[in-house]
Image (tube, rainbow, N blue to C red; front, side):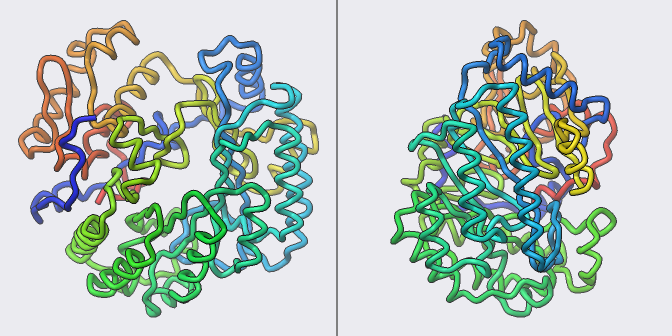
Length: 470
């Protein structure tokens, strides 16, 4: 990786530049993005993709798998949330859901064979810690019976601090989890009340300390800026409090207020949201606060301590992206299990049914619950390679793309290179005869550079469905 991307301090970013680039855009955990999936891709097409993998007729046929399991349940709604979730205090609902997961897992075993190696396993939600210790044990037993999860695998879980204590963390460690992520969002009490998620700094402090004592390899915390009642001053306090706790990784997301798409957000009064100027100041605060505390800026909204595997991967040019965001794991097929889960097998993407009844009905009939997806075209694969090179390495080598995809880069992307010119004038990207290089300043707006190569986005210009890139 270009050493220019190893900034140790937040750059000088002008208000004019931040305002100009404060536009909606994809996060590019995939390309094409999930909004491009179609219902013409369903269970039959997914089964065919699994068959191609099993027969070794895909490039990734022998590679390890990544597993994602979606646990949709939460005891109460957080008003900012845009995840697929089921709000319930009836914990007995988890039993039937685990029964369905068992069926879905066995459908995969029937196609792939038992004992496929796994390099990455992640439980997300919702709140995975909605499950009891016994239920988590059952789930992990099912997964380990179907797949081979070696000791070297990354095994992670999202933890709602309100549903965990030291005993729960100890049980997670005994189950083989080696990475935990705590949803914090903000420590300010007024903000917590406004988003219906109240939890103390002391509880998070204790959970992080207990996780460290139990030997978890990586501890992550999630923050959100742009929430109701937030101010630059209150967010600065949260940033300082998190930096003092020294989690290995920090994700700092911009809140996307899309009440027309996500019903819980309708409980947030628009008048309580910070202004664009305040949001920009919060971004500055986060960048300066975490980088000033010794964190490496990974990209977009992620930070890591310099000795964390993610920071090492960035320095060595080994970053990758999948549906969970930046990762150290090489590109591999991902199996999505559970309601609404997204997967990738070969040159296809797929998504499961988004409601529990639809998910259950498909499995009861012995069928995969896939309801939409996409088979990537040659152009999709070409653009995915370019966009992921931008997002992960900050550099596109034209010759490497030409050899891999049998195109002439400057001819294939003549329009895109022209659209990059304003970003070049802003000092975000440099283009010469052989490569495209994201500058140190441009790394903070890497989504804007990647968006230039998104054929679908450029064609329709409908971007309100995405979060803002600042």
